[in-house]
Length: 492
Image (cartoon, rainbow, N blue to C red):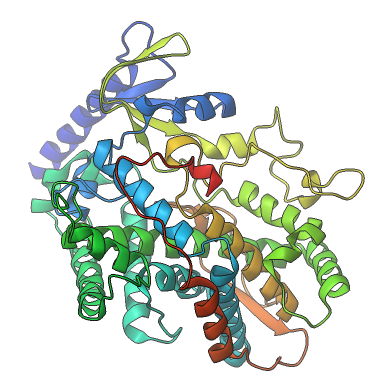
């Protein structure tokens, strides 16, 4: 009897889904309805770029998973929307700019993390499973800038937090059951991932709550050290609560930085080392380019103009891997929108098909092949390509793009200087089909990091930290006001 009822329920749900998919009003753009939700799919680069530059497309769907993440306050930078989101995005951009993102201080922090990662991989020896290998390294530079905190790569608490975050990112992929049918959490809180989502939120906020309290105890309002200090100073100003400058919101914002920092950089580096190991001819050419320019010297961000093939390879990793497969969906939260001769209803989910943009055969030659030379012109110079959307586009483009570009360049170059990247001969063939989640990354695979040369002397951390402090903490900080007109995000 129960089996019969379950079968009937499945049939009814399938009929409802098919009905919703084909239920379209007149003048409806490419897409479908899902449980009453209009879903619009944008696959053309020009349409994506045009749409996402408009305020009408800058909303975020407030699903149960997103609301639960922020204690149903609807805030944060990644998933917030409206005037509050705009205010806090501008504030974060200004603080990151003042803290030296994209300039010498942030480069020194990334160099220290590259050195620490190389030493850890060298000491580990043998073959390693690559999955969350680069999470902590990629996140540490950002955490130092925003919260003045660095974790050792073998810190067990931080490692567990990274692993839990990776698991939740797989659970929270677009179309997850909790977003579609949130009531099922009452029937199966563990199987649906609801308990894991809540546990990660509470653990992460507790961790950052401790960091905030430590900052509060040592705060010098005349010399802010990082983003947390700057936020705490704003909290003391008149009207701060109305503008959502609160401790709870600060914890959510730090969680945004943390999760964005570990997920995108780690996924990109996983794709990079896997693709390079599968293409030793590309790797050999990169070794030659790096050796000719640098010898045994450390890679610097300023070297990028002299390393066109390394830049081309990184571009091809972004294109081929497409970490942000559909990006974070946009939402027409405020009103219907007339766009490209279509009427897009209010509360429509807008999905940019970035994978299609990066693999469109009408634009890319042999899009399923990993071929860095597509970004090199006949004179051997790098070809600028605007159709790479790894950092998004428009009003919701990646807040930390300049730091992320620097990190990927220095980490990929640093790993290539230090290692031959090889797939162990006894390992099963590496699977190039991605793991679905908030980002797309390769499935776990084994890799051999074979040292190319004897270990270099350890970087002088104290000297670099002193130079960093001299170069960055004595900068003239900009005052923030919600009434100030800020430069466009791409200028920062």
